[in-house]
Length: 239
Length: 239
Image (cartoon, rainbow over all chains, first blue to last red; front, side):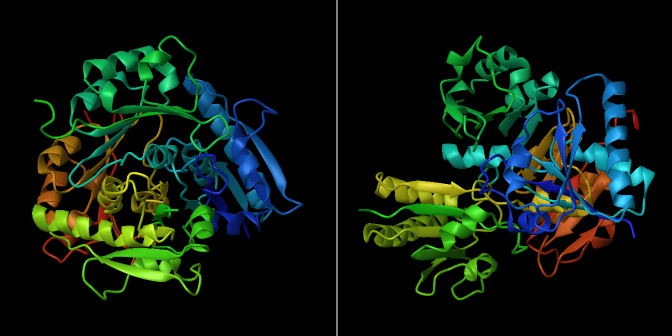
């Protein structure tokens, strides 16, 4: 019988913010795979999972380069899917580890789709994880949304949607802000949001950094794992 | 010394989707409080937490009516905050339980604010939880967002933002859809989203119900704990 594929969210980085369900699966898993930007790079997701894994677990390093080049991406997913499938076809269960939640900006979406297209009979189960922005809200004491407020989660790649989102009344989480930080700074300023925004980097991890003084980061190198929480203006406070 | 106030997310309903961190705190807590719509109503959040709580724990039932009436709400929060404070002032730690995540549409936001205003020296810590929509995405196999996609989480109370959100290219999570289901059905149809939407009720709970055939729910009584995941159209598929 073919093995089962799990997409496991290990949470934002704090090793205690993993779910009991994830731990239970990891304790009995035969193959664990870890997406890597480069071969041999230490993996935070694997670090979090390590103490639950059985001794004889197979660790499969999947090299998934961070690139915008579509063909390169596509072929890295195909390759990863095929590698995973060789284990599944031996009847072994495979856990694909994801920082945060496998349903949100995770390569698991693409890779599991490849596996399903190669072998539709494979069962896939996703175990949700705590997102970086949930922990950022917890740490700053800022709620993500209350009452009739809405929350927009937007990656910086899409400038148009970002500008549009900031103009609206949503609370906003800007993801992957290192990609174009100066643009974001300007956009926050223009939309009068600098006062009600927090910059949060490596939340729950060793090098966690949180500040409300976002302006002072101008021109600095921004860590890849950074986001900004921006609350909409209080009703009636302005306008 | 005054006790510490925890806001603890116990996850969406599946008892295994609680974090290790939440469990660790619950195992040593002195007072647990549970928001209730009516006195004596069974609490799902308490059920999930129950097996971790110490035997001698104090259970504080907070009656927080589901009403739109502002003064009634405000006074119920004030009352809840004051009750919590009596325990904190005795030096006891208090855990406020929340289904899902305490930072998202939770009464914890209001009640903790009351406690802080009455006693600014109280330390508050939020332990994030898995949200219902993360689990809904996991169960349906639909990703919440990929690549440059954005995700809008919008409660049904705000019709204008809802309509506007559906018109845009975001993926959308509609929360609290029981409040105005026929309106939502119409809005999904108008924005050509019915095909790419899932209705998910009591996700991770005993009475979980998931369907893509949302139209057939027209006119039926919709469970309070229901949401809709709506993916934006695939690029290039339309227009």
